[in-house]
Amino acid sequence: MSGPRIRVGALLRQGDAVLLLQQRKGDRAYWLLPGGGVEEGESLHVALARELSEECGLEGLSLEGPIAIVESISPAGTRPRKHVVHVIFHADVSGRSLESVASADGAIHGHRLMHRAELPSIDLRPPIHRFLERWRSGDPFVHLGELWVR
Image 1 (cartoon, helix red, strand yellow):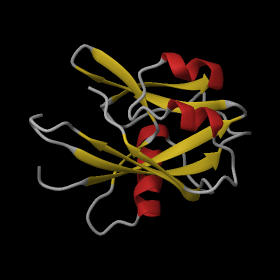
Image 2: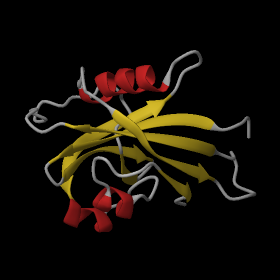
Image 3: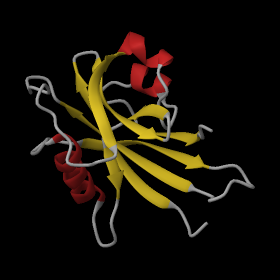
Image 4: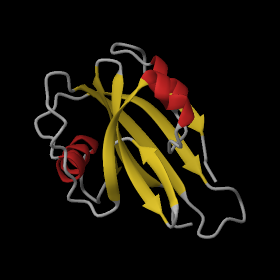
């Protein structure tokens, strides 16, 4: 393991729904918050703005946060070993059309507004279902701990 990787993500809400992106690795599909890796010399806000533009075509969002941090650390013996620190921000995207969300990122295979009731049944990475269901603007910052999905 070469050291932790920093990933920024955005909890983008429209009413009680959250915008999630689908990625595939091999024959497995899973969902994640829009965002991505922070490049050397890039601030968290700049990295997130870049990623939201690349993955969703969204620009000029007013971001709240960070609202949460979660770590994904692969179990000992896993090769390659991974440690990702996810820094999560929030933006309300009510009033914005998300129908034309298009990704310039080849790893993204779709997007969807997921309603709170749907969240427990999806494969979400990292597995922060309960946080997404419960978090409200103005809630205190939270460290969600170490979460890993095999």
